[in-house]
Image 1 (tube, rainbow, N blue to C red):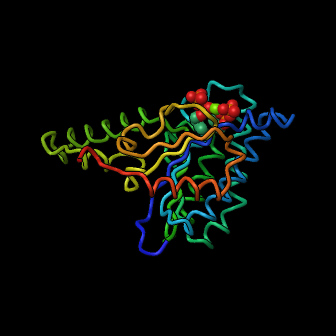
Image 2 (cartoon, rainbow, N blue to C red; image 1 turned 120 degrees about the vertical axis):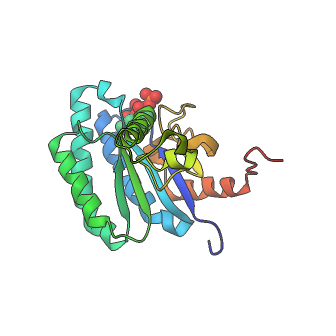
Length: 234
Ligand code: IPE
Ligand code: IPE
Ligand code: MG
């Protein structure tokens, strides 16, 4: 990958539940398998020319699921983070969690603080985990923060530009994924990175997230590199 621009890849990791059902397992087994895939993709990403990886783990809409499944996903986040922390530190991965943290269970907030704190000086891959994340919620939070700065007299409405607004987003400074991948067959965005994906290349894959491998990522990246990105020009 020498000489090639490093990429920001965002992924809607969909299809865990269906994968489990297809294998005669409870839905939550699909989430466990999906977490293992995240591990493998994080390990492979830097070697494939990826400098930032943003993964959708839990949406603001996913609270509508049965409590047992929500509880399982939250516990899985805590146990996964705890298990992988030493390896992530070793690899220099810098982990950040984007989303509304205020309403997350206490154990999850503790795990978020630990992983962000202990990987803060990582100089390698940026791993952004979207947890209780919604694209609209992120935009509203940015608008609120800017408004509060205006009220406090430290910002002025006429200074607001697209770049300035982007700086208030949870994902900053990793804005603008070069490509967004969605597994699981659905052709929709489901409230992910609404502002940031304005000019991202979109890849909708029929395979289910637990079936995704580093080879899948490599083949999507080679298709991405062959695409003609015009950004409105000719
Ligand atoms: C994605 O897989 C993971 C989360 C939303 C937490 P799903 O759980 O949505 O799997 P399907 O779409 O039901 O197969
Ligand atoms: C999107 O998947 C959210 C995550 C992958 C975390 P969903 O399964 O929740 O999306 P919908 O319900 O198909 O839109
Ligand atoms: Mg789904």
